[in-house]
Length: 399
Ligand SMILES: Cc1ncc(COP(=O)(O)O)c(C=O)c1O
Image (cartoon, protein in one colour):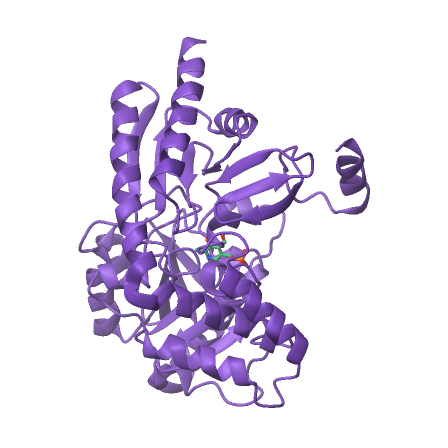
C-alpha cells in the first residue's frame, strides 16, 4: 500500500485529500481494496454509480461498443448519441441535447447558451447569471465563478464577469437581484456539495414565475440531483415546474464520464454550427453506457421505487439515531437517496472511523454527513450503515 501512496504523491498533482485506501474492484454497493478488505459504498463515486459498481448491463454495453467503435468525431453522425438524445428528450421537458464530458462542462455550455439566446432574442445588454450562495457548479473558471462559495474561488481571480449571488431559498432576494441585465438564474434544485440543502416547497415555483415575468431563463443544475437520485428521474418533477435549460452528468453514464446540457427548442436554436463543441462530447462509448444506464433505470420504474422505499427506510433509521444522539445531530434532510445529517461538529473524523469499519461515507460542507449510495441499496446495507454510525457516534460522544 505504501508504494501506491508514495507513487501517487510523487506523480499526481496534489489536488485531493485522499483517504488511505486503494480501491480495486466493485460489484453493486460493495467495493474491495487492494489488500482485500470489503467496504459498503455510500459515496457511490460522489453520486455517480446510480446502478452500483459494474452493473452487468452497463458492462456489456461498454464491451460491445468498444469492439465496434470507441471514438469518432462529431463531424459525423453517431448512432448511440442519437439514441441517447432521443431517450433524454422523451423523458424530460427538453427538445434538444448537447453532449460534453462533465458537470462543469455542461454548466459552461448552459451559461454560454443562455447568454447567446438572451443577447440575440431579448437585449444585447443581457449577460448576467444569478446563482445561489452555497451552490456548487464546477471548477472551470466560469463555473467556479458561478459557484457561490468564496473558498473555491480564492487565488483564481480575476473571476469571470457577469455573475451575481443571492441566498438560496430567499425569493425576495431573488426578486431584488433580477435586473434588465439578467439573462439567467442558475440553481441546483437541492444543493448537494453545499450540505444537502432543500428549498422550501414553493421556492422553485416562485423563481420560475419571476423568470417568466422578466423574460429570464431558468437553468437547473441537475448534475447531482438528476438520473433518479431524488426518487424521480429529474428533481424538477418534485416541484411542479420545468426549466428552460438543465444540466446533467454524474449518474448519466453509470460511471463513465459524460455530461449533457438539455434545453427547449426556443432556447436551443440559438446554438448554430461553430458556436459550441467538444471533441469527446457524446462519443460512441460513453453514449452506449448512458443508454444502458437509462434503460435499466427506467425499466418498470423498479429502481426508482427501490430508491424511494430505501430513502424512507434510511430517513427513519437516521431519525432514530438523532433521538439517540441529540447533542451530535442537528438536522436530517434531503430527498430520495441524497440525504444528509448536519452534525454539531466536524465530520471528517467520523468519515475516517467509518472507513476503518468498512463503510464509505462522505462529508459535505465540513459538518454534513452525506449519503449518496447506488439506488439499488438494500435494507441490510442500510442496517449495516446504521450499526457503524451508532458505534462511531457512541465512541465520539464518550470522549
Ligand atoms: C450540482 C453540481 N454541479 C456541477 C458539478 C461539477 O461536476 P464535475 O465534477 O463533473 O465537473 C457538481 C460536482 O459535484 C455538482 O454537484
